[in-house]
Each structure stands twice: as structure tokens, then as C-alpha cells.
Length: 213
Image (cartoon, rainbow, N blue to C red; front, side):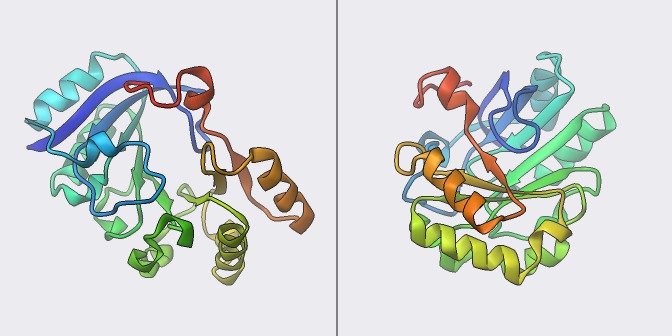
């Protein structure tokens, strides 16, 4: 069983997969309370659903790319099995996680998109740093940046762990409505960082608070 907040199809708004049609399985429950959270409704409880039903609803959306997200999907013990079921069906599976729980529980074929929580989130003390050692060449790392302090902190972490060499991409994302992407872009260019500026495309296409997109 998994607890599901929503299952829907949209345009992928983040990561290097941005712009592609994507089916989302948003699981309920989160162990963090980030200052800028935009999915508070996923804190839970969700709808309890058998894996077969979750997979069936996802398959009905007819989309090869699938993301399991939350909340925090790794809180649920059946998330690895859900990811494996989707992989076995031929889907490309992304799993977005806040980086506070062991990522090695996920099947090898899943692409992990791991948040590293900046100080501005209020949750930086919860980071599971050993997860960095578990990252593979297909995985991605995301920093959500609310201001200059977050940027400098993220830049230092990027360099200390040589993240650009460890994984497929390092994403720097501005907190929507708090930090102008133009400002973040300028900092990245000034320092010549090997990172990708990320915009949350869905918030530009639809209303920033709209659900199911």
C-alpha cells in the first residue's frame, strides 16, 4: 500500500527532463517543513492505494516518463517496489527526494533527483550527507536558493563534494517569488559554476498555486 496525494499528467517543470510530458505520482507525507514549501497539501494523510491501483492509474495516463514525488516519497516503505513496477513496465522513472533518507533503497534503474536543503529552508540540519556518496551518473542534485546566503552555501557544497563530477546535473533553482531568476543567473555567470539554472516551468504555464499540474 501507498498513501497518494494525487496522480496526474502534466509538463515536467523541473530537472533536466523539464518540458517533457510526464505522469506524476505524488505520495503523501513529509518529514520536513521547508519555509518555502509549495505542496503543503501533500503533508498527508493521503488516499491509501494498492500498488496495482497506483500503477494502473499511472499507466492510464499513457506517458513513458513518470515521476514519483511528494511530500517525501521515501517515507513510504513501498516506494522502491512502486518504482520497480514502473521500471518493469518500461517507464523512465524519476524519484524526487529531499535527501534526508537513504536513497540506496531505490532500484538501480530509477533516476534520483535529490534536494540538498539550503539554510533558508530551515531544514539544512536534516541533510543526510552520506547520500552524496550514493549518487550515480544518471542522478541529479537540486538546490533551492532563496538569497545570497543560500547561493554561497550551495556554491561551497558544490565545490567541496565535486558534485558536477558525481552526477548528471546540478540544478540551482530560485525560490519562486522570493529570488529573481535573473539575479541567480548573474551569480552563476560571475562564478562560472558548472550548474544548470532551473525554472519551475509549471508555475509560468499555470497559476503558481494550481494543483494537478
